[in-house]
Amino acid sequence: MFAIIQTSGRQFRVEPGAVIAIDGHRAGESGGKVSFDQVLLVSNDNGDVTAGTPFVAGAKVLGVIGELDKTKKIRVFKKKRRKQYRRTKGHRSQFTRVRITDIQV
Image (cartoon, rainbow, N blue to C red; front, side, top):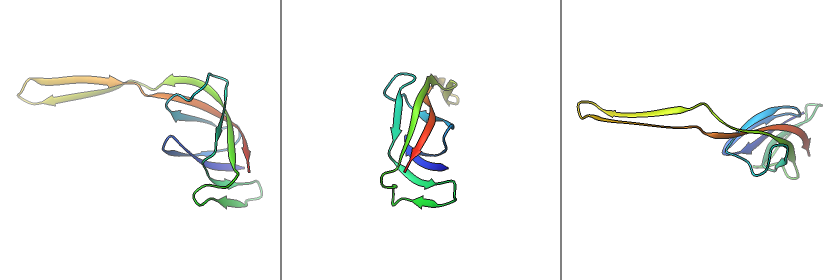
């Protein structure tokens, strides 16, 4: 059984036991429960596929919040040649790991 969900402006293919990394820090502490209502497609073990228009009515994906962390540092370097202009900035994007526990249809 698997489902395709939409969250944080992206789509993820999930199944029970899968771990996904979602952009940003979700509300809640590590170990808290989270529910995803925007389910685009659900497929069961028999191979029956239910596609939504745009979402499957009554479908939900449940998960548990894992770690809240940051990605690897990204450096942004700007330069204009022969003008003595150089600027360096950088950032580390935040993400949340979520372990999928159940798919409800």
